[in-house]
Length: 171
Image (cartoon, rainbow, N blue to C red; front, side):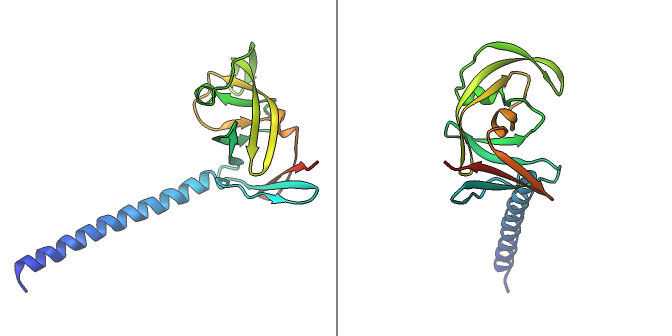
């Protein structure tokens, strides 16, 4: 065996190792993302009388789910303690939500300024809600939208173990 073929073999092994590490990194990044939000593509169970969307709790004990506001993709964090759907200001600007009346609201971080807004359509799986009251919170960093009772109050939800099922009556 000559020196050139040995170097070529070593080079190919090195490239294979780099590709292998890149693939493992990509795979485990996806695993971590699913642990944070196991509901990236929620499944809808459509029955004659209702639509159900079962959600799995993430490793932190929260229910995160991907959905849409006015046909734009967003992530929701279910928060039964929030009166409204609460949208971070950067997200509200991206979604072109209208700024309404300015007000004050008690948040997890104390009193803060908010702006009233309305969401024309909010969607999680096949569940669709229309004309949902919401607040824009300038103090929130861009991230998950709090899905509060202004939306959750329009549907039923039940929890069993690590599954929370959203249910919307049809008709």
